[in-house]
Image (cartoon, rainbow, N blue to C red; front, side):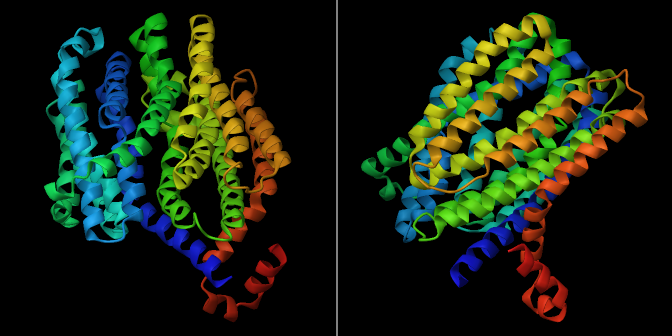
Length: 488
């Protein structure tokens, strides 16, 4: 019991540390959206979003997602020489791939939305790739505090560069991309020097058989990452093809409010992946997965319900009026994002078990469904079609992984809880489309459903809140101990 308690406390402590370090960057998401929507037109934002998503596609292809292997193999490393092998191989694979990437850029420059931006895209991919490797290896070395400080630095530099480039110099798309590049570069250098990562670079540590093992682990994750990106961003390219840059920009902004869910979940996910790997050989790992999955679900359901309750006023206050119509599509995307986060959680099973091929197979199913539905629905229904296709793909991926992952770790889950919460959230998404309702009627209906979702999930959320309370405080306040015993 003591070991299990320690596991939960480690997960909570790491989550809080990551949250503190990334709080600024998450707050930055809120701050920068009004800045972006005022400094960039919907057409410009549609283009800049496609450029950023193109970079997200190129990074895993040419680095083979070696950063994921840096985390997994880094946590398994038993001494400094093994750590040197992990970091040196990671850099070697990434640099070789990124050098090879230069060959395809003359072809990419012919794409209409990349004309004039291919060089800055190339630099973007380099700096982002280097930051990913340094971030993941720093986590593998359990330098959690350094990772958290880096989050603060990255936030401040991003904010400063965006204000200077977009508001003062009015550099538009170039300013948007340059702010990301410089922020990533400063972050990479900070992690490299602060973590003294140069100590883990050694040509003698390059081991071909070890490199093959790392690539064998990371390559399927590259395919899975690409398929996940296809599922999440293919709609943007299809919308642009059928409906133009303006609607692509509206669609990109429609994702911003659901991104609140993703950013909060990421704080937990970074800590959870470390715990999943650490607990892989534990005798109580099934109960550990069961409890964490249940609590994670409850928290996400309540949080998403809160967003759906206030999604229209949030959009009105947060986003420039030129993008206001994006509120129509955000509710469906919010529902899709809930299952996106669940899929990431279940993917940790494959990471812990080193069954990364399963990540590819499960992602392939979702990617195929998404592409088929995009071309079937977007020409006729526009962004609504894209949102429905995204939800359908991630819901199928969730069900697939829920069944498949239990072949490796037999954790429990509640079918009724998933069904009830999904139906209630879907009802909130539908009600948000009813513009003909009087506001007090619409918000009364949304509030009733929110309370129902909170009631269904409150017990699990309360359990984790009570767990955080220090034992000394519990001993002084007997009602807390009694409440904890009753819940358990």
